[in-house]
Length: 273
Length: 266
Image (cartoon, rainbow over all chains, first blue to last red; front, side):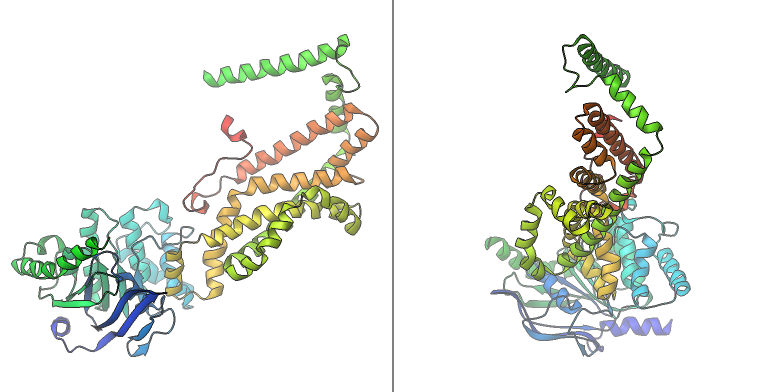
């Protein structure tokens, strides 16, 4: 009890040990500069939401952390180690389906452990435990096309979290789901995350989602040459219920403040089209 | 009701066609030398089918087809995956591949006979050149069309290059190859038969060539019928095999209809 309480407290403190450091990073594709001079620090156990208008280069930041893209300038480091290539100590929840269509739910969740050379029996136990955790007990033999969108998301969650990553990256993870499934999955995610808090960087264009899930919300400017314009601490108690938290007066105040900051950028991004 | 009617009309059509032909031959309207009587052809087919020696020819054509298919598919997959993975090499080799693919494969038959003799292997080689390109292009397409998100995800999960090949690229290519199975087997048969027809000492194509050499139109027609049945049986066997699991269908285009169109009747 006391440990959990201490943890929750630690999150709201600004001085918690940094897990991800983005130091003066510029991402460019040829002459097109997506994001410029971005500085961000994500604390260990902190849930960071990044919001911004579409096309502002939100995803490039995640891909830089994952090591999928190299920054044109600046450096990203995870737990003190600079990111040079594709990172294996992270979990990445993509917007699109990222499951292998020719593998069953079980085999998909198993991948990370298999690549790490975990023995078969240990793998089986862990995979079954994780499938049960995400509410897919009995579905282990199904192929992705035999699962619903929400169920596929659950498999993806189990797949990303089973390797116990240091950082979890999420790129609009629930945007393809219908609103009820989305709330369900958001609560599910919070429940799983609450169990052993890890650093999370989530990108979204849904401000409600950003506030409801995050400890901090960062607003990006309209692209190109996007940068961080403001950062808001989310002072809402955990555990939270995503569908009810929206009625909290604190939530509404936060929403108004952040939207005031975000609105100008959204309008700019439309004006430039 | 509809199905029964279709069948009835089909049978009636066949009866009229063959009956008219037979009638034409017996009354002398149709020249027996060029268009032998259907009954004679049927007789010839029966003589062959009850002759144990005939199955040697079937066996040879079959082994040429199977060998040509297996070798052609194997090489096609290997080359397709390789070039799919290295776009640079693919760009370099592209004009050469196009040029080789542009050669009508039939004209290669004499060269293969020269190199490999009149036996089995010159036919296998011809079948391989036909099958190779079907599989090659499909495998390359399969590798190139692997969803980049799936690829990134698998890499983040810790996959090395060999893991990617085994768990992502080969299954992706396999799904495309499965969908082109019928086409490539068809090509294997064509390769084997043409090879035999142009120069061989055994096989179904050889039977036709020999009959032609003797101005034996009955033999040629009987050979054609045997060949048609041969291909139909292979097609039927493939139909069972083609009940491949759905998850192996290429992403975005599940269940391509059969090329021969025979599946549409059912």
